[in-house]
Length: 284
Image (cartoon, one colour):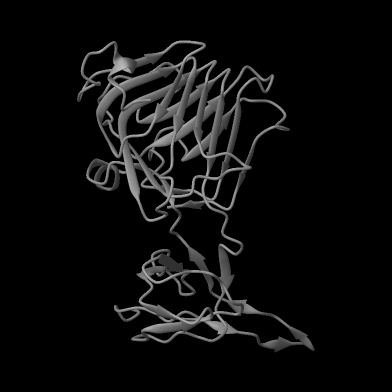
């Protein structure tokens, strides 16, 4: 248990700027609500994040510059038992900080190891508008009923001529198909189905849910300002000796612009992938 003094040899737990090594055969169970901003974690054993036992709204946070799973195991929920409360992992570093060979910085890196990240399943993570949303609208109607809740963030895809015509809003009221928000829309979002030659062609803006209970993100100051976010790299020498199963989590302020191989989530030269998967995530 992270919270037990015996874990740290009777000394104080790690403080800001320190690093942690979890040797093979040892398992560190993270049961604290807030970590210091750690330099690095080298995981050869297990790093397991514990959800709150009774409160699904309870938030725990974890901050670091580097997390390297080297032949070890990192878990934020499992496929059978997803993480049930709220968890936010924030990665730090700038373009000028030290790089790990291959993996870079501001990274969860996996080599000869396993990464399990499983948020609560959301049955429908994106759908389409049922009717056109006009400029100034403070609500939208969707084609199907979803479980998106008040306080969660959605994105409405642009249907204009510019790449930045998409808009994000926080839900203030909903009945499952109609969603209200406080800030009026700045752009028109089409939902039409014209017929050409007897064939109906549906052109409807997509609407996606951005919120998940597990969040992996770059720090909110440097990441958007410098286009230098966090990333996850799962690497093996082509033999699938590294595994990453990641579902229903939110990856926010991720990816590192103008750098090759620094994608938000990257299976790097891993070979044929049978054991890993990515599904139901929000990446933005």
